[in-house]
Image 1: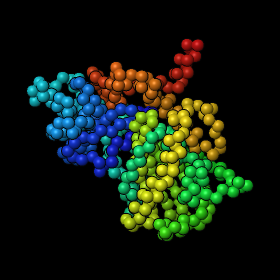
Image 2: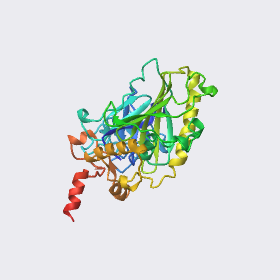
Image 3: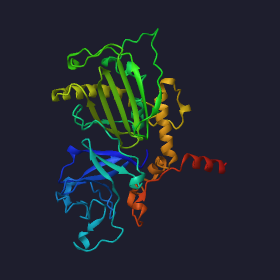
Image 4: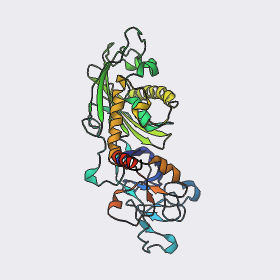
Length: 392
C-alpha cells in the first residue's frame, strides 16, 4: 500500500449534512463530513485527547455532530474544523484557545464523479500525482451509470491485476460471450504495453474472439463475432481503466477507483460510461450485468493464494499474456522507489497496540508538534538493498 495518491472515501450520496461518516483506507480510519456550504472534508479519525473516533459512535449520544463547520468528537466534545484545527475544548470552556497540539491531520479533498476523494499523503500540491480525469464525464455523447460500490474480501492489487488479465475471460466469464474454446487453435494474442496518456501508469489494447451480443438487453448494440476490442490500464496503484469497443465505435469506458481497506478487504467505486444505449432505462440492466461479471471474478479471487501480491515475479510462473500485470508491478516498484510504500509488517506489529498512527498530511511539512505518529514507510528499494549488503 502507498501514500501520496488520491483515494475514494465515500459516495457523495452517502455523505449527508448532519453527521460525519467513517471510512477505513490503508488500514486506518478517517472521518468524512460536510460543512454548512456542503463542502466535504476528510480528517484523521483519532481525536488527540483520549483517542475518541471523530467519525464514529453517532448513536451513543445523539448530540449534534457538526457544529459551526466543525466535527464534534462524541467522547468529550472537542470540535475540529475542516483544516484539522481544534476550535473548542468544552472542559476548559468554550471560546478558550486550545493548545497548539490540539490538531489532527486534514487531507486535500475533492468531490467528482459522485465520489469524495482525499489525497492521503504529505506532498505539496505541485508535486502530487493527479486524480484520474474522466474526460468524457460531462460529454453529452456519453452517459454515466450511478456509482456502483463493490465490497470484496481480497487485496486491492489482486483486484487490479485481475482487470489487466486478458487470459482469464474464457474461464471466469463464459456466460458473457467468452466460451467455446477450441483446444486446437486457442491462444491469447500478443499485445503491446505502453504508458497511460495521463501518466502514472500503463495501458494495453487487445482483440478478443467474442461472439456478437445477441440477447434482448443488448439489441441496440450492433456487434459481430471477432470484433470485440478491449483495453485496460492503471493510474497510480489503485485506479484501473477499461475500455470495451463492441463495434461500430460503440464503447464502454469503465473506471475502478479502489479503496484498499486493509490487507484482506477492498471497496471498489465503479463508474461505467457508455456512448450508446444512452436512455436511462438501460442503466438498470447494465448495472445488473456488471454485477454478474463482478461476482464471477469475486468467486475466483477470494481463494487466490497468497492473498498479497508476491514480492518477486520469480514466485509465480508468468506467461506472455501476463505482460500487463508485469508492467503494473513495475509501476508499483517506481512508487516503492520514491519511499511511498507503507511498511505493513511494522504497521501491523504496533498499530492499535501501543501506537496510534496517521497518514501524514501536507501540513506536517510546515509545522511540528503532532500527536499521532506518521505511518511507517519503507525506505526505497535501493536503500534497503544497500542496508542489507552492509549488514552482510
